[in-house]
Image (spheres, rainbow, N blue to C red):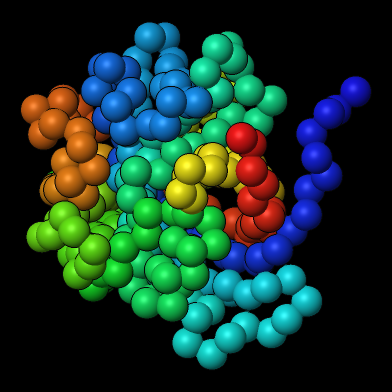
Length: 254
């Protein structure tokens, strides 16, 4: 029998133009970034940290129209994957956000107060274009830039410049694969004061495709506490199709 509390939706959102850039890192590097109740979730012994730029639209409370000036924002988050300490596998695999950058001042303040999420105010740009490679193959390019304004540490910035073969289809990640481990996560933890919060999100499974980095500045990951040297290895890059998301109410778990 499912002992989880019933899902209570509070927000609608649509996530567009998602790009995931993942680095494999030593779990010991991420452990100090987590509250004591959580531990790093790993895949075949490796932990992963991600830089994720995207566009968020359609932001509104359930049952209400969008609030002018708050329904759309660019975002870039730094995230890793966690579970409750001593738990081999959670019923709903979860995310821990090390930081989240957004353009909207109101969204930043509301998320910091309501969810305890470490949102930061930033200036951001996101460019979509098409190009061709040396063989004439069509590429879909995604270039996302972010520069934090507040709170500290500042300056903190990021760049993701990625390309995806336009004729590569999007597909579901197969269960048991690294890609499934990385993207199929429908819960988050956050800390508000001394209270650990848990919230669920619900959306259709991601349809993704792999790509390649043309350039990257992981400055936001470094600002979150991950040593730059840990990000020197190759990165995994994926693009996801847009999803409409139901955001659940946070609940205290301690």
